[in-house]
Image (cartoon, rainbow, N blue to C red; front, top):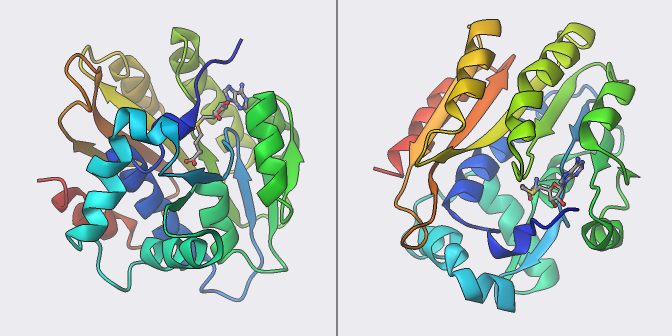
Length: 256
Ligand SMILES: C[S@@+](CC[C@H](N)C(=O)[O-])C[C@H]1O[C@@H](n2cnc3c(N)ncnc32)[C@H](O)[C@@H]1O
């Protein structure tokens, strides 16, 4: 039973962190004239309406991307800014791209994309905008294990679970270990929440023990509402593209 719906959280401060780094990596990887693979285990619906009742209810986008744009947090030439402008040009001023549509902005005809989304309604919505990719209505880790190593071998895998159950945290280090063994040249990026009770900490420790060379980018922010458990956002990146460390420092500075 899947109950998480990203529409309540799209464009929040965690999305801004994750999507800014994702857009930067895709911009970097697609600057070279060599085809790549883009894979996502937990894709979501791809396109969000920040004027919709879900977003209005939580106000998370208002405190996130809406505030960031009003206050010019991102440089005008940041790759996320360019992707967002194109989405708003196509879908209106309140549209916000999920990670699949951020990827679509950068991917070229020679690139190959696989997106998994298990929730029936989210998958249905994704199928309306995800025509550029192979769409999988199955568990994202099972899909990734089946398609890796992908062709072309160059590429990026984004893992962005909803962490609805503790088992999600337990599964990640083993899944990433297996994927990295199969696809040792792939960029593997994992998003995780930083929670007030530090529930994510054992997972992050296990990942860094197994992959001490990986890049870790963490930002902190106030909870969206009193009593809300998320107080930050983390990205773990195996085989980070050259320059990502500097970009992660620039993005982290926006949160201070
Ligand atoms: C955090 S959201 C994804 C957000 C998206 N990556 C973005 O940045 O725009 C997580 C998504 O994973 C989906 N999901 C949950 N369990 C899944 C599973 N086992 N396999 C694939 N998708 C799953 C949920 O329905 C939800 O849409």
